[in-house]
Length: 166
Image 1: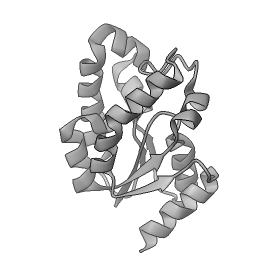
Image 2 (image 1 turned 90 degrees about the horizontal axis):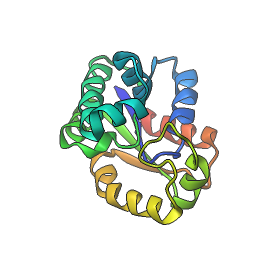
Image 3 (image 1 turned 180 degrees about the vertical axis):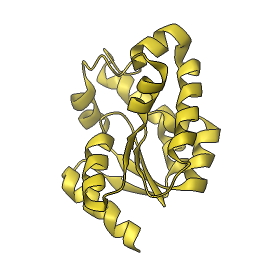
Image 4 (image 1 turned 30 degrees about the horizontal axis):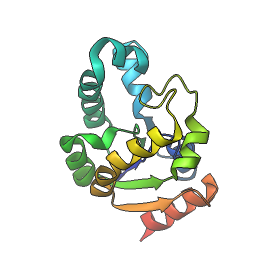
């Protein structure tokens, strides 16, 4: 069983994934890091040179690789659920955990991060709009959802582990 964490930028995917890796001993795959390694350039460079569509193609390729094995913790990028093919892969090959975050919390966590080309320099209102545009995709991909706003990363990881043990 693979466990994939999805959710909006700033939801805590990387932090929680690292905690899950420590608790399970399973390999940790950071999808964005795999994309950067495979392409030999940063995510902002890929967006600038190939556009979002080019980035999404690479993202799908790397998601397939990540899901080809078993028992891995995978931290997906904020937009990995946007493509129907990716949502299908997540449903078929993983327990897909949606980390829910409020727009205000996400804004505080990602504001000014140049490595997030879809969020860098955006206002709270623009973040709300972007989150709303992705909401149905997160719901469609998720096996279950954990609201992270009132939880520590450790509490979030514990809730996911409890779900996995069922």
